[in-house]
Image (cartoon, rainbow, N blue to C red; front, top):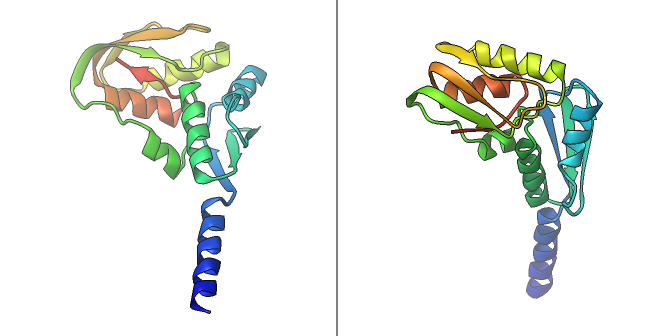
Length: 165
């Protein structure tokens, strides 16, 4: 009886570990079909993962939590950001060291609406004097006196993600 109970508990634990995981990201920049395709395309190559968009909400469904984490990381790598605890765990807050210049790579800037939203985000950072944000660029520079964490926080608030160096 004791071994049967242990076996049953083991099976229950295993099924919980393999339970489907759904993650919703809120506030993701998604202004056009290219953005939506970029978001859903981030899951390409990930097994047992699907991503759907509905305005600024992104729903990730995965076979398990590990798959959901990989999908969140893929969405961020594609240049998008949304509010969720898994995103907070995967996101680097950047440095608090004052910078006079930084290069941002990996942010999604497919159209004029994307670049306009990014410009507003970058210009909202106290101390930014100039930037080279433009449509379809792979990277842009930001100059002034600011921290990487301030810049990344402004980008994230606008629904974007990228690497700052």
